[in-house]
Image: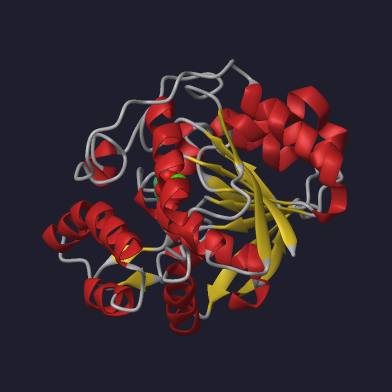
Length: 304
Ligand code: RIB
Ligand code: CA
């Protein structure tokens, strides 16, 4: 059973990724650290708590609030897609949990890395601010984990927030640069593969018929907003960016990796560069196999 630490900015696809983890018997979510990205970090923390409350895992993970903004630039959010509250603006209002001490997420990353070591897989599905701050605290501990799976980047395809940059890398390029340069066991799951993994509303609705009612209602409610945004743009469904990163953490065979040397540009571009590789990049994906696998586990994310 693989211990996971998930660093996340929930966010609709992040919430689906968390539920995928809770519905997967191969892993145990040790901790969830939140980071400002799709929405402000207190909302990310509240949304993570909402997902955990619905999943109701036997051993609930620590939920620790992290960086309120990028290392060296103002925060840019994605509320146009995720809603003002980060989960589609359709759930009953809920007070944000009390703020935790700054830097606690970075300390949680380091302490979990020290405790679990090579068995640990960290899955980072938001901007890399917390991971970069953890490197400041103890780069050796982070270098000794098993895998760091990151959803981010656009290597041979256009970006989704600028013509050349993907959102997570664009929000905090300084953090991404430190992470790529740190010699970590880095596996990048970029737009090159995630944009090929599309969840159609009809497929989700059919799958949710098999899920417990509370889980089905929760997922159907928080995804409605994003499905409307996608439909307005004539897109066929939701892009499962973050669920694919969790999927790769649990079953790397969904993708084909290439060892690549990447450089992070000033705006978060992820450019190929000559020289020794500094990461593995997923450049092909078995999307037709992943989506049903994802749906089957999503519907098992909660037993009640
Ligand atoms: O570019 C996609 C990424 O940005 C995903 O992690 C999504 O949640 C947003 O954070
Ligand atoms: Ca995310």
